[in-house]
Image 1 (cartoon, one colour):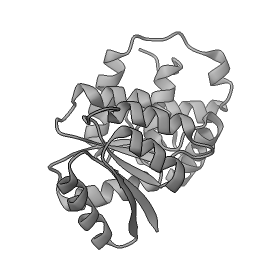
Image 2: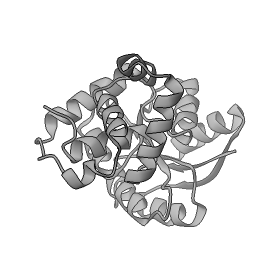
Image 3: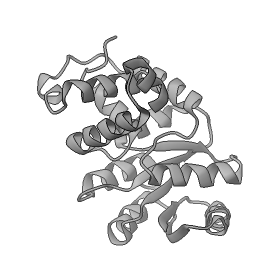
Image 4: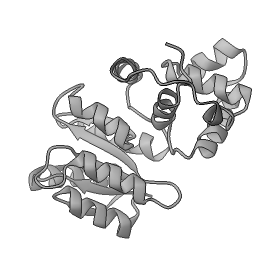
Length: 218
């Protein structure tokens, strides 16, 4: 059962999301918050698998709350699904830096919300691969290129680093497997070990880590 915390300052949005998710089966909404401060408190107490996080809220916004929730986590942090009104909103990139795992529009179809929650709970990032590539590309463009961090790279084997770099370039598991002439299951195994070593919970934050540490050539 996937546990979910809903965070939005509009009660009608929370109510709608609760109905959609709980009717899907295998998903349990364990709490609701109307602002970022309450979200941080509930995340500490409830330890949900996924948090559906609004961005623009009075008081502490969703970005500050996401940053605090990720920092507070002991072990694997919750996966934060940012719920935004605008596609490629400037807040999306701040959320990436804060530790968010995925993004979805508020006017999405119910099945898209359900799929997003399930995918994030399984350790995946954005829902649609085309959107993933677009967001990663824009994120890379907006960030100044850092110097490669040799210490960070040494955390990974040569093969793990190779796969992380291809992931950061927007390739799927199947495309990485084709590129390296290995099985898709082998790609998944290497990625799982790499994520454990660098302390991230999903593929999207693995990409953020790769860019942040200068592993991706410009």
